[in-house]
Length: 220
Length: 220
Image 1 (cartoon, each protein chain N blue to C red):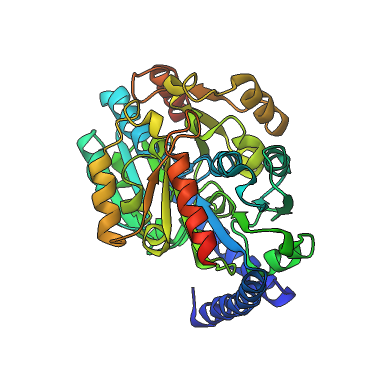
Image 2 (cartoon, rainbow over the protein chains, first blue to last red):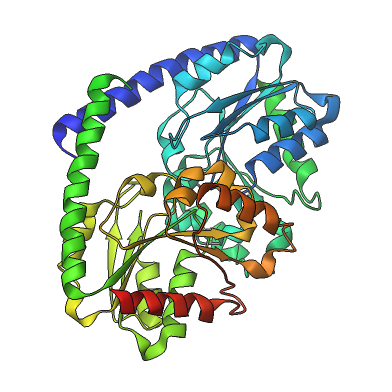
């Protein structure tokens, strides 16, 4: 990439940061905790969101912005699981959400009714990390089935994230997941990031994860 | 993205296509079958390549170009598994390989000694699809653990690919993988693409997949 193109990319990212700051102000004014969910395809983003909704029950009013290349299956799922409100963004091929897509989607959400907003990013462990959306918390969702070497292979998101949810913990033995390797790799990048081991299939760890979210909501 | 930026992206892609065409000519001259392996992080790209190497044994001389954001673990793995030659590309944060990276890497490979070349792309189900490298075959590697809805959520790669390997078939039951849903979704996008179900863990399907590759190598 030549200097001219690098400058254009930098301008795009700067413009994104400005819109993200506006989004953040709106979230702060409404007193909402906003979680940007970043993960590989198939790590279980929608499952973790729906199980969190069910575990929270009436302890929080939760909105969801669903980012997908195509389709609206996930929005239907989160509404059935008890989301107070949900908006679908179709990126039309784009590999990540950008702050202006969120700004547009906010027109369809009643922020004052919500305590918590999940933004489910496009399934991609790399690109979403470069585009801030105005979130309070960058959640890196990883699954045991992807392997214990993901922090080594994709260090940027494991370094930048504020919390890690390690999903499909029920499969750990079946897929020879080396827990020590995973933890040591994460700690080398991000020494005190909280890590929650969960299984959306059998419910392991969902209470602990949800309690942490409720504590963070009270601080917002 | 404004018209000016769209034009620059188009120019970058056009430039990439030109380099890809040069790569392709070199592959054709050397009589090598080249496979661009595209998958989510953790789908098992390196495992499928190493198991294919072991299954092929001395029936083919195989080179591997490993694309990773960081590290060289995978290159060491494929060399131990019997690759005749291997080159590591570190993209330094870039979310996909580009044709000029391959052109550079070819300087370190003795193409005339090889029958088959795997290019392991960066773990990403979206961006690598936009950048052709000069390959004969675009391989879409999906795993049951990612879920049966991947063709619906990421239609572009399932439409463009020349072959699908469905890995981790041993986990299908454990993860409630709905085979009919997966096949119907794929067929709606890409009616006659070959699909191979494999397990790198217990060896299922590797002979069939390897036989198909050998047939394609003979045609090259």
